[in-house]
Image (tube, rainbow, N blue to C red; front, side):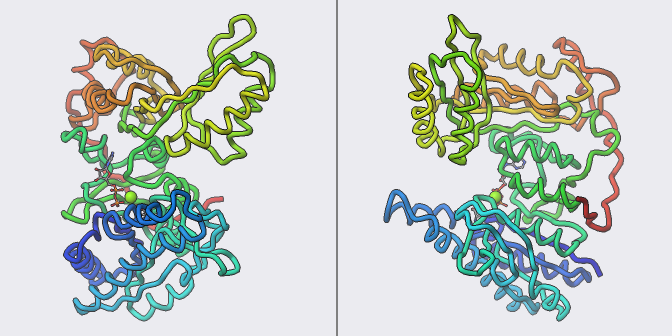
Length: 444
Ligand code: ADP
Ligand code: ASP
Ligand code: MG
């Protein structure tokens, strides 16, 4: 008998009808003979609503009390799902994060998992029950504090439990048929991907796609947990997230993501001497502020400008810290721009094919979209552009790399001349189906 971990997101349990539908899906699976552990999110926008409620009381809610509040969202859905399964003749038992021993540090609202005890689950499963666990929440070592894992943290709960219990796979159920080439709300022709590597998924998740929480993908890769993303609305195969396999690099661009909640900060007139950048970014890191892209201008007569991006939510604190450093190092001023966003193209094929970045920049130029900042990794190119152009850029790039047609595997190096693009995006044979690994392999 194999153990499967399933995770249902907010959309999949948004209404009583949806909860009943999920209960039916789970029961169908359990009756096939699999042991099931289900992790659920709060219903629909419940977490957003709770945050709004807190903000209606005070603009700076106490983080400890925020966690006490936010953890209630998932507690509602686990109880309702367990009731639904029982009402349909099945057997289920709900657990909070604390009850199963999701032990975290004490960083309220963004706690990190220290270990997973998975208490009580084996027993419940052994008794033929479906175990239902509240996502997104945990408790501190001493049990004194309720914590939450950061937005989208239910995905991490699911992967962490799958790793701890050596589940055969961790399946994510969504309102889309799988991981798509891009956000279907922007490009309706976006296609489901049969497979994607952990690294590509990680880039997509961290570059703004909402499909999976980035930390959960990292965790899955580290512990070798096979992931599947599929629909809770229709019976489709979905997307398999796996280690890179031969042939996967033949697809140049697997997906396109965007983030609209970016802000650009520029420290003007920075003295160009060793240690200044270090001082600025050390101060930001010490304040737990995550910086993404960084650009330093060519220096003129001993001064330069340093620009970088942060999320909009972090902008106020970033400005505070940057102004402090600017005053100390005698920089001239600090500016910010919230009218920017980021678009990224992602694919392991970029490692072995040249010209992908050039093709991206050309396509954006032809659409009259100005690039303000660029950053790259081995398998990703990101650009910062004006926020109002984000959706157009996503559409242009989706077309440019032929993502609306069947996944193509290139037979030869990528060439960027426009007349060659048609050739490259011709339909070709789909890659052979990968074998799902049977056991979660533990790596160090
Ligand atoms: P959940 O309810 O499980 O938390 P989310 O709402 O976080 O699910 O994520 C699914 C949504 O993410 C989809 O409805 C879709 O609109 C959006 N999305 C954005 N980019 C993609 C993508 N590349 N593939 C699939 N869905 C995407
Ligand atoms: N309910 C939480 C959120 O909306 C956690 C999750 O859904 O993963 O962020
Ligand atoms: Mg989500």
